[in-house]
Length: 330
Image 1 (cartoon, helix red, strand yellow):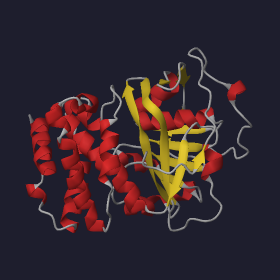
Image 2 (cartoon, rainbow, N blue to C red):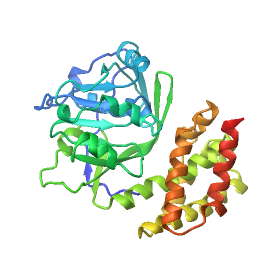
Image 3 (cartoon, rainbow, N blue to C red):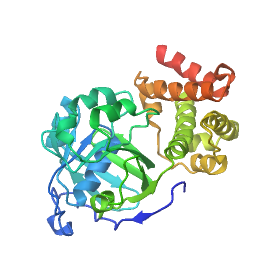
Image 4 (cartoon, helix red, strand yellow):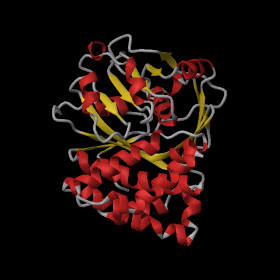
């Protein structure tokens, strides 16, 4: 595991397949009745909205027009490897933040985050904390839109979405929240995430947290997209498997441009331990002709290489990216 487990939350019970509500499962409904807004339309959006619903919060999902309707009428089902139950959820939805929240979560994919932020108004957010899970390297422009109470957050888990079904593969995920410059002694997050079943931890080194998330994410994404294979299958092929340590080492060398020395061994082990059925988002995106994830990975690596004074054009990572862009253009 990469993250220290500072706070462990009691695991919530799953809903029965036929249930739409679970009033008997809610433990002491939160005294703060203001809503939690979750912005995005991906598997992480659905998962976080579901876990916060389990904890008794009033959750409102802000997604695109089509998904807003689907989330509120058809809903989603959530299946977790650690549970034998199938949980079903229908979410309240909106196209913008209408009332002051107690928490705003930005979970949109990198390629859609700018459009999603059109729903955000600083005056509506007020003093509420904003968690940004979108793995952008620079979030300064987001902070200008949402205010100074923005926190970087990283999700360490294996989520997959197939239509209205969301799967969580492997172990219980962890959420890492990075303390911002305005961090105060009164921490709002333990109460909010109580009874969600998530392991939530806190760090002050945002740069390290970012690269410990991004390095295996980038390498796993690129290898699986180029070969159109799940990472589990890649690790069973010795020739492909042997590329993982070299690519992680390249990524770590680029991260060193920020004065960071990454421990490569646990990052490699994380990729070796990927669940059998998990697919990185880039693999599905390439198959659908998209390129948002590829652009994110490319821009982060190129800028990092420049800071580290490394010729990115000569790197194996760049060669893979070129091949992936060729696949997109075909």
